[in-house]
Image (cartoon, rainbow, N blue to C red; front, top):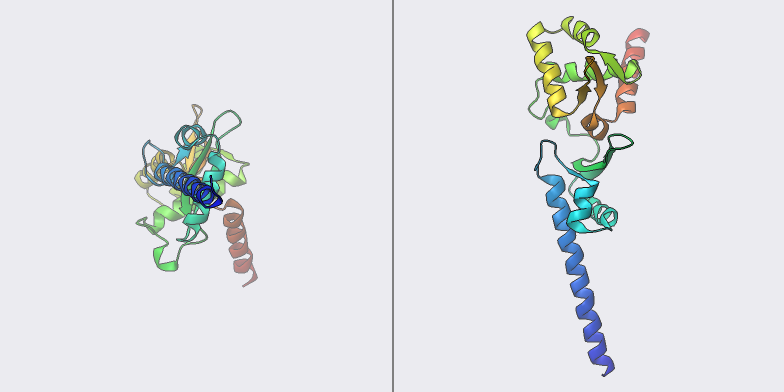
Length: 193
């Protein structure tokens, strides 16, 4: 076999390998970007099954591609025994005009109040206490509606004893340290004036 034929063969093999990687990245993108279960994204075992054992490398490559359009892949661990969940979300902060994303301002405020209170109670708070705080600013029906909506959307979870916890979506979409910093920063600015 001549050197020229060998180079052509190597190029063909390399092109096939690149095309295979592209296909795996496309499949990973489909799993992460389109909702196919109750929750968006994909669990680690789903990615492993769909794109192979080297799924972390594929996810990293997908993250680089999504970064070009302002998205990023987040990795969220639900607990010690549950598999890791990956999904795509916005990179950085949304533009001022995009911030509400169809949410009412009072609903967003209720979410911030709920998450802040749960964080201040070391990650868990009785539902009754959260309801009492929210009822100071919102009607009772709106409080119940919002808490149930936050649970359904994965921002908070509730156990059998009516204790609320921060859930997977909050860990993935919201920078909790920055949220608290913003709240504390605003509070100190208000007390100074």
